[in-house]
Amino acid sequence: MFNADDLKKEFLADIESAASEIQLSDVWKKYLSKTGSVQKLMTGIKEVAKEEKKAYGQFVNEVKTWVQEKYDEKKARIEAFELEQKYRREAIDVTVPVKRRPVGNLHPLTAVKHEIINVFAGMGFEVFEGPEIEDDDHNFTRLNVLKDHPSRDMQDTFWLTEDLLLRTHTSPGQIRVMDSKKPPIKVLVPGKVFRSDSDATHSPMFSQMEGLVVDRHITLCDLQGMLDEFVKNLFSDAAKTRLRPSYFPFTEPSVEVDVSCFKCGGAGCPLCKGTGWIEVLGGGVVNKKVLANCGIDPEQYSGLAFGIGIERIAMLKYGINHMGKLFENDVEFLKQFKA
Ligand code: DAH
Image 1 (tube, rainbow, N blue to C red):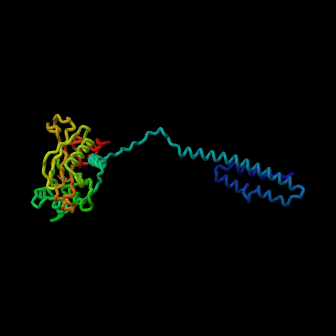
Image 2 (image 1 turned 180 degrees about the vertical axis):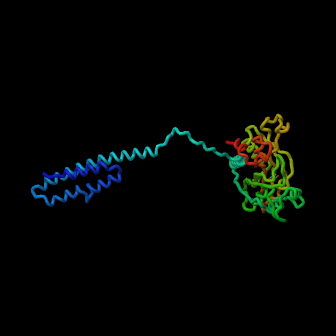
Image 3 (image 1 turned 90 degrees about the horizontal axis):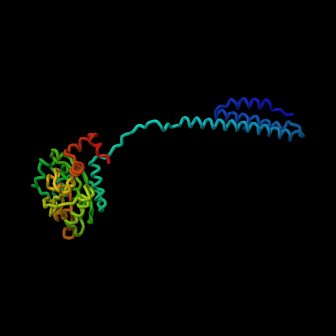
C-alpha cells in the first residue's frame, strides 16, 4: 500500500558505507533527525486520506524502528571497532626492556650533616643558620677571642676588610642566637667555614656544626650525656666519650672530646694510633663573659657549647684518608656512599 523501498535502499547504502562515528552522525542527520527523511515521511501523514492515517502512522513507525535498529547495530559495530583501534594505539609492550636511569645519592657530607641534625633534633635542638661573611665582633670579640689571639692571624683568617672576614668557625652563630633569643636555648648551627690551611686533613673551606644550650643549671655532665648519645648514634652502640681538658676562649672549662675507637673497640689499632681513642670535637661550658656579652645573666644561666668538624666525622665514619676527596665531586668516589 505504502512504499518506502527507495528510502530503505538509500539508507542501507549509506549506513553500509559509513565507516566512522563522524560519518555515522551524518547518516543520523539525514534519516533520523527532526529534518531527516524518516521524519519527513511522518509529516507526509497530512496528505493521506483520513481513513488511512492510522495504517500510515503504523507504517511510518515500522520504517522508523527498522531504520533505528539498523542504525544502532552499525553504531555498536563502529564503536567497538574504534575502541579496538584505540586500544591498539595505546598498547604498551610490557616485555620491552626498560632503560634504567641511575639514581643519585646524597653527598657523604650532606648525609653526615643530616645524621647529626637528626640525633640532636631528637634531643630537642633547633637549627639556626648564620652568614658566611662575618664581622670581627661576632667571629672573635664577643666570643672572648681577644685582639692578640693567634687565631686572628693573617695565616688563619681570610680577612675581607679591616672588620669583615670569612667566618673561621660556626661559633659566631652562638652570638647571633643569643642576641635574638632568650634562654632556654638549644640550637645547632651548621655551615661552611674558612681558614687558610690545606693538607690531607685540612681544606680552606670545610663544614662545622655548632651546638649551644643555655638554661638554668647546665653543666659539663649535660654536655657529656648529649655527646654520648651522639657518638652512639653516629658510630656504634658501644661507643663512649672521654673528655680531656683543653682551652678555647669561649668556654671555661674547655674540653677536647674523644670517642672510643669504633674500629678496634678500644684495644688499639692504626685508626686510633694505638690509643683506643679518637678525637672528634671541642666543647665546654660557655664562658660567663660570652653570656654577659650577649646580655644573658651568668649568675642565673649557664650554657654548654660544642663544635663538630663534619668532614672529620665523615672521614672517620667512612674511612676516607684525604679530605680533598670530599670536594673533588668525583662521581665514581661519591657513588660508594649510596645509602
Ligand atoms: N670553634 C671551635 C673551632 O673552630 C670549635 C669549638 C670548640 C666550638 C669549643 C665550641 C666550643 O662551641 O665550645 O675550633
